[in-house]
Image (tube, rainbow over all chains, first blue to last red; front, side, top):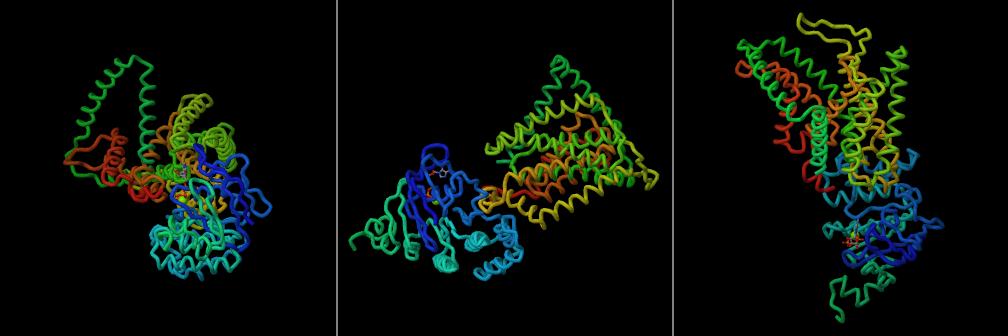
Length: 239
Length: 354
Ligand SMILES: Nc1ncnc2c1ncn2[C@@H]1O[C@H](COP(=O)(O)OP(=O)(O)OP(=O)(O)O)[C@@H](O)[C@H]1O
Ligand SMILES: [Mg+2]
C-alpha cells in the first residue's frame, strides 16, 4: 500500500538519501535498520513532508501521491507517525494528548471508543490519564506517543525507534503490542536500532547505508545474513 | 535562550526610542540639560517626600486599589503577548499598538461618529481583526519558517509603522472617553470610577474565559498542542496555519480590549503603544514567558509593585511617585536574579528538551 521509489531528499543542504526504494504491503511489519546517520529518519520524515524532496522521487500511498502534501494533511490519508524522541505534548495531560491524536476525527462516540481501545492496550495510561506527560517515565511517554498515534485507527503506522532508551522488559512489551496492533489491521513501518528483535517480528527488513538501499529481504532471512549479523546484531560472522 | 533573545529585542527597541528622541536637538546640549534637570528633580522630590510620620493606612489602601486596577490592565495586555509567544516563539513588540488600534477604532465610532456602545464595540473590533489579518498575511506569514528573531525584528518595525499611522490619522494629541463615568466614593480619601471597575471586572472575566477556552475546548487544546510541539501537532493533522491566525486574533482581541478599557480611564495618545508594550513585556518576563498564569501574576505584581512601594515609608522616607516606572524595573531585575525564567517560567531543563 505504501510504495516509495527513487526517493532523494535532504534538508536544503546536501542530499541525504539517494534513490531509496521501499514497499509496505497490507498488514505487514517492515523494519529499516542501518547505522547512525544513514538517513533512516529522513525516509520517514519524507513521507510526512518534513524534508525537501528532489524531482523524480515518488511516494504513493494506495493510489495517491504524497509528495507535496502538507504535513498536516497527511494524517487524513490514514497514516500516523511517531517521530524519533517521542514528541508528546509535555504540558498536556495523557488524555489531552490522546484527544489531540483524534483531532481530525469528528464522531465523538467513535473517539471515545477508540480511547477505550488505547486504555485497554495500555492500562497504565488510564491510571495516569490526568497527569501531565512531562512527569511520566520514558516508557510511559512512549506509550502515550503510541496511543496517540492509534487514536486515528491508522492503516499505516510509522515508528522511529520505538524502543530507544527503554529497559529490555519494556521493549519486549512494546514489540508484543506491535504484533497486536498489526492483528487489528494496522501495517507498521519502523526504524529500529534493536535490529534483532525488530527483524524477528518483521515481514520485510531494509538495510540503509550512507543514504542508499544496501539490501532487503524477509526479516527472518536477514537475521541469518552474515553481513547483517556482523554489522547490526553484534555477532561475529562465521560462528 | 528565547527569553534572552526577546530581552535583547526589547533593549534594542528602547535604545532606538532614546536615540530618535534626542535627534531633534543637539545631543550633547540636551543631555547636559537633562542631567541638570534630573538632578534638580531628584533633590526636590526627596525633600518633599521625607515624611517621618507613621504610615497612613488610607494612603496605603488607595495604592493597593490602584495597583489592583493597573495590574488588571497589565495582566490583560500580558496575556495576549504571552499566548502569541507560546505559539510563535517571538514577542510581538507591536502589541501595544494593537491595543491602540482597538481603542482608536472604537473611539472613532463611539465618539467621533456618535454610535451607541455595542455597535461601536463590534465595529471597533471588526476593524482591529481585519487589520490584524492583513498584517499577518503581509508581514508574518511570509517569514513563518524563519528563526524567531526575524518576526521579532519585523514586529519592531511594525510598531513604529502603526504608531506613525495612528499619529497621521488621529493627530498627536490625547483623547479621553469620559462618557458617563460615575465615581464611587469609598471613604473621604478613596474613590473609584466606573471605568476602573470595568477594567478590573472585564479583565478578570476574560482571564477566566481564556483559561476555560484553553483547557476545555478542542480549539483551545489545539493551540496548546501547537505551543508545546508544532511539528508533532502538524503530524496529527492540526492545521498549524489556521491555529496561528486564530492566535493572532485572540491576542489582538485581548490587547484591543485592554486599549478600550484604558481609553475610558486615562488619556490615550497615539504614542502610548510603546508604554503598553513595555509594561506587557515586563509582566510577561516577570511571570515567565509563554506561561498564561505567569502573565496574569506578572501583570498584578507589576501593578502592585508600582503603586504600593511608593505608599509605604522606608525609615520615614517615601519613594517619590515619579519613580514608579523605575521601581517596576527594579522589581523585574530582582525577580529575574532569583528566578531567571520568571516566577512560573519553564526550568532550563524543560527548555533544553525542546
Ligand atoms: N533537520 C535536519 N536538518 C539538517 N540535516 C539533518 C536534519 N536531520 C537530519 N539531518 C542530517 O541527515 C543525516 C541523516 O540523518 P537521519 O536522522 O535521517 O539519520 P538516522 O539514520 O535516522 O540516524 P540515527 O540512527 O542516529 O537516528 C545526518 O547526517 C543528519 O545530520
Ligand atoms: Mg533517526
